Length: 193
Image 1 (tube, rainbow, N blue to C red):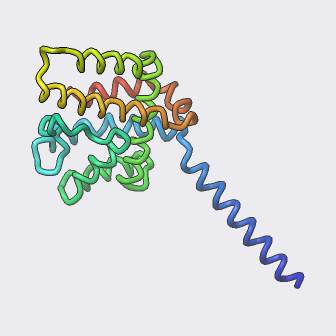
Image 2: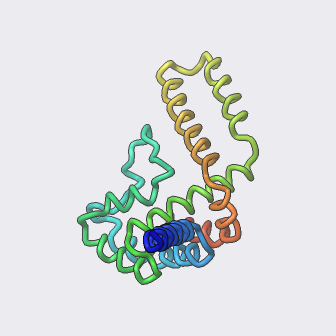
């Protein structure tokens, strides 16, 4: 009986320590965000080398009516890249910066980008009421065709989904990302050039 209690307590302690480690591993830290920024900067050379090859995500070819899932921007990009020569090279870059693989890097990227969106949207004010006013004006505009109104409704719906996604970003992610906003914005802007 005594031996069973000791084993049970040891198992409980082990499970609790694993859960604590997992929770800590999922937290965005300054070092994780710094590694993400450094990997993005290094990825610029890869983008220049592979952007015109098959499998490299190309935002210019995306349909304007289909807004990408902003909560999975990096994860979806990595999925598109699978099976291409760029995938292995890019995975080497992220591993060099301490990430286990491209999927774990992309997961961090999704969270960092979500926190950036939330910070920027909260800084911009109440976009929801402005969007509702714009929707009402558009609906009452006699000069807009029904097709144009339908396209605008779809675009506004996508924008509302982005706003909802930003509202669901964990406060801990926002606070972790906030001190890195200038470096992240500079890196993301370099990525668009």
